[in-house]
Length: 69
Image (cartoon, rainbow, N blue to C red):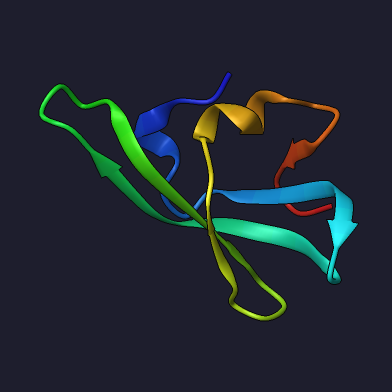
């Protein structure tokens, strides 16, 4: 289970690689006044490209794996 409080700087491996971007980390997380995630930016290690992502997508084990593999 993924805790929104532990997202920042967590590492992720994308199982379906695009543009040689396989390894990522969470570069920015913004919370609202109720501590709910309102913005999450994931950054590719290979080229520093950043993408906004719905953090709940990281729970999809067919697309993402926790850590760098």
